[in-house]
Figure 1: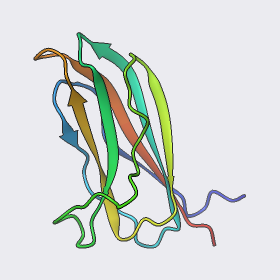
Figure 2: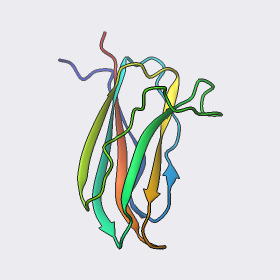
Figure 3: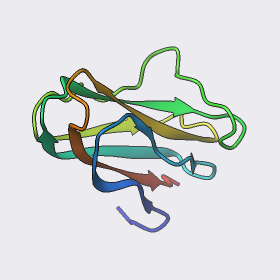
Figure 4: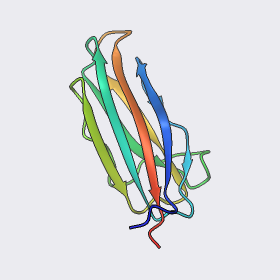
Length: 121
């Protein structure tokens, strides 16, 4: 299988985060599917969990909505994790919304989000 036409984008660089955050918008126009990876490499202190989900935009990143059927990563509770979501109906584009749940102020997770977009034709 040829890799021609694939594009890899880092939506959220690996860094320690102590608060909920959103990735940048990524346009998916012209691509058939996307593989979205969440890599967690550390946990600091006592956040209960890290939640991450896909939110779609039909207007190039001005407004966002969660899909009717959730496209969420498995909730992260440990200090390491590697998750992948395969999106086959990406619309115009999306972002990844991450939420720190529970824990003490100033504690969080170190993680990154990477997307590989594919043209299947």
